[in-house]
Picture 1 (spheres, helix red, strand yellow):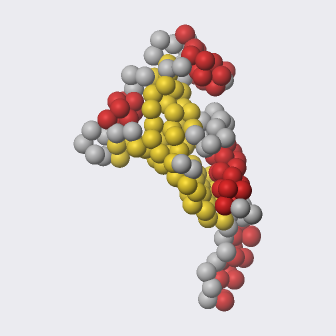
Picture 2 (picture 1 turned 90 degrees about the vertical axis):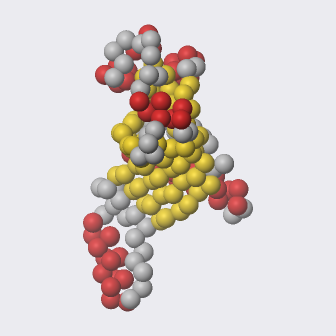
Picture 3 (picture 1 turned 60 degrees about the vertical axis):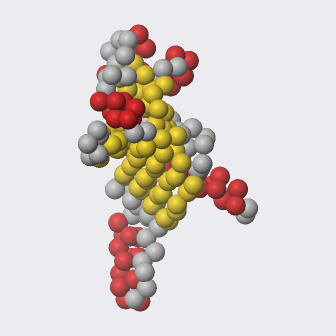
Length: 168
């Protein structure tokens, strides 16, 4: 497998893990340098290149933080499936009506009652540059067997896949 094919497989795996988890913690930097995180839904959408889109209000605090410091992190966690993803990159506010319409889903009405007519509605685009994921056997038994085997052999436990991916 070539480096390009391997990278494409890693991005595919990354996309699948994120889509299955859906809710991520978006971390920004506050004006005093404090890291601030909040849950955000990707609405099961991940671009082929790994970029993420989030619906937001343009006047929100997180948008002001991103305008000051575009570097962000988004972490995804599904402890039941033993799947974890951390992505980092840059974020920007996007007010593209066509993109808003393309990504809109009915369940978003809970947060945006006027739907696409909401005057302050916008998108946050996270251009993912680097990512790391952990994907372990979801079965408690399989996980326990790997840990017991490691304790008896003195070797590191094989508790799944861990990959670092450079997207850009």
